[in-house]
Length: 357
Image (cartoon, rainbow, N blue to C red; front, top):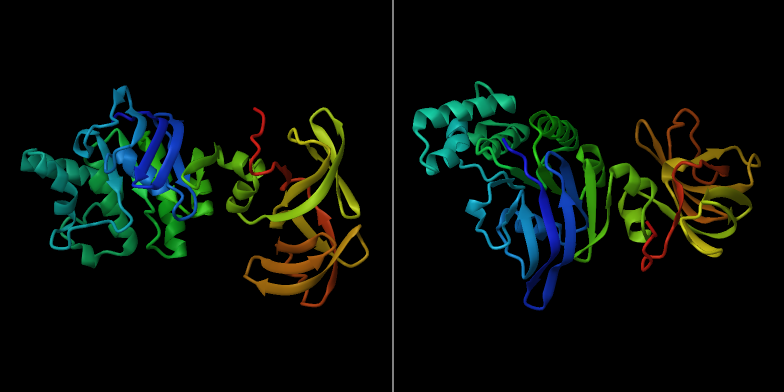
């Protein structure tokens, strides 16, 4: 397989008066896995279909490798796609499903069978040749769909919400297998999901989309720890948004007053005065009343095995907290002290602002 880079240059897709993708530009390096992440209707699936050639852009240029494929039909793009529904032929066995594309392209049957069996081995389905899709588990059906895409040896492999039909445990297993396969074969993969945890687990880079545009792109950790605006902060995992006062800038640092406490945080180019602060739920530590400057009262507590989720009223407003201290739980109505860790507390630029590079 020959992995290819992908480039979008000012790409727009309109359906009548509806703009599905609005002047989007990005570059995906060959051999990397990049996820298009965002809420329903943000344009991520349309962007994936534009890469596949299932949609053609209204404006802009799309390149795959060294080819301008802006107006090239899907069948001529050397791209394979794994759909959300898997789209397996129910009357064909596993081997027939996987070799189908090769047979349609008029590869000799013996050669197609050999390549299909080798690809089934790659996805861990050796010996499943004669089974029908109805005789497979959801995870096995998903692997057959991946094998059917891989057997064509595409330069780009696309995934459209591939794990949405699986239960939580199997989703975790399959995302690990997809990531391992991508690394082992050095594939260029573009992956669409609305699940933030899934995106962070599999991706080299994430492109967060909102309202048909790119809200922010970068490595998973960068997006989680340095969100560009309130939308990205809230979409990349749970975040408490509170108001603070920024002052006393020194180099890249500033002092941020939150109620009765003060933290030193990167000021991110924001001016002195009122600022929005994002606090991740796991960055809030609860203790006995009176042991810190911030306090609150537990409103709800939900035990989830390895963690407890709390909702509390505090001097900073309503807070959502995730605690691993399950051996010392608080109950609704308990007073608590609140301490903030440095990790997971960050200033958020206004949504209209663009952070200086």
